Structure formats: structure tokens, C-alpha cells
Length: 332
Ligand code: GLU
Image 1 (cartoon, protein in one colour):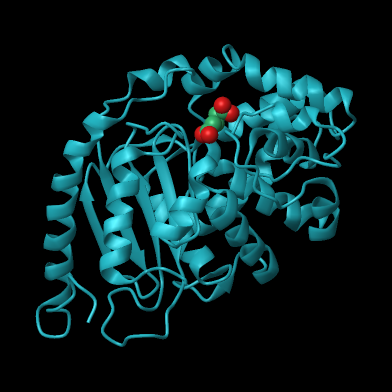
Image 2 (cartoon, protein in one colour):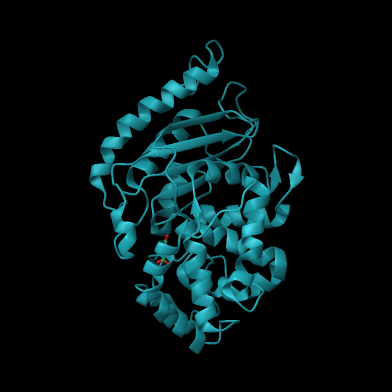
């Protein structure tokens, strides 16, 4: 029997799960003190480091939300998964795979080091580091950043039922401060990886990172990935199965910066984090134990802006690890 679900079959399940998650959110909220908010994009430094919230949405519609659930925040690097999905859907999977690889780097998200190792490099290592993500942004179709991002907004709108917006203040803060991303952009331009104008590409990338979202949105999008691209609420295929599965493989191997290996080992679900403190995690349907909560799969959104050294929500990761272990969410 998995610990923490001993009463699963006998008690009012929803209330039990709610109380359980509430308890652990208040426990892990103290851990936010161990981390720091990102400040290299100045406006992100204004977040309240003690915030912590989680939203879990099952494929069957069961929703458990706890902590600071109503805060919207910018999606940041989590957007990289979805620009990749859109690039695969519009340009074709093999076109994208030919230009951006699917190998983890073990380096920080904004590392420039591997880009310079020309003898090893034929293309950026993966689309979830900045070099790969900026290359993907350059592949999106359109002459302006708004045209390029339109299919991404359409995808979100199809899943969420509303069109998220760009937080202009965050966009401007990032645009005016991201010298490292500009350096990566110039390097990609010089080495011939960029498929559109550098300034339009960077504008696209900064804008996609500044899309405002909530943990409920992330949980909802997560249910679609958990079901290989099909929205379990409608049965509609929103993302082609092959693309959804490829994205989950990338999330598992590269989604949590240079802590992706540890996250796969200790939590065991595809996930992607962003420097604003968001995490999307995906638990596919499981066939093992009848009594497990969310056994038909779930999407999870977490927000906790205090980050650890790798740039992941420090309390968010610990909370996810706890819940995933107790409920046996791991895909392994
Ligand atoms: N916009 C951020 C950057 O490129 C995203 C980083 C992240 O969330 O990892 O610096």
C-alpha cells in the first residue's frame, strides 16, 4: 500500500485529498525561506518569496487546489515546451529535429559554453535551454513577433478556453536586461542557426516568456500532455500524439535545468520549470494499483517564486517530490 493513501478507498476521497495537500503545502511553505526569487530580470525580484500554491487536475476532472492558487505569474521557460510544440505542429517534427537536438546538457539554462564547442556542436542541444529555445522561436512562422506567437496563443486558447495575455511590464523588463540572451542570439546568428531576423526572434522569445498564466492553467494544459495530446475533458486531439510524447521526453530529460536527472530520479514525472517559480508536471494514467489517487493521470501546476540554485522553485520541488512519492505518480 502506498503511504498516505491508506484511507483512499474508505473515506470521502476528495475531502481527504484536499486536507492532505493543505497540510503539506503549509509544511513546505516554510521551505521557501531556503530559496531566493530570481532578480536578473529586475521585475521578477518583486515577487513574494513565501508564496506557494499547487493545483492538481485529474483526467476525470477531480481538482485539488491549495495554498496561493489565485496568483498569475509569467510562464517564462515553461513557454519553451509550447513554442517547441507549435514549431513541430507547423513546420513538421523532422524539420525541427534536424535543427535542434534532443540531448540534455547538464549545464545551466542560459549556458553559452556548449555553443562554443564547435567540434561537438551541430545544432543546439535541446529546445529547453535558451540557445535551443531562441532557435525554435526563430522557426515560428510569421514576419512579426505577434504573427509568430499567434499559433501559440491559439493553442493555449483551445485548451484553456481563454486567450492569455503578455505581461508588458515583465516583457519590457526582460527585453531591457537580457544581455546574456542577446549574446546567445548573436552567436546563433553568426553560426547560421537563426531562421529569422535576430531582433524579431528575441522579441518573440521575450514575449513568449512574458505570457501570464496561473497554476490552474498549467494543471489543465498538463492533463492534455498526460493524455498524449488529447484533452480528456472533450476527447479532442489538441496536440498530435507524436509531438506530445516527444515533448514529454524532453521535459523529463531536460525540463528542470541542470537538476533534471535528480528530478527524474526522485519525482519521476515529465516537468518544466521557469524562473518566475512556476512548474508544470504531468502524470500519465497508471495501470498499477486500483486504489491510487489520480490513477487516470493528472496535470499539476505549482507556483513558488523562491528558487534553488538551479533555478527551480525550492518548495515547489519538495512538495512535488513528496506528493509524487506518496501517490506513486512516477512513470517508472
Ligand atoms: N526569460 C527567461 C530567460 O530567458 C527564462 C528563463 C527561465 O525561466 O529559465 O532568461
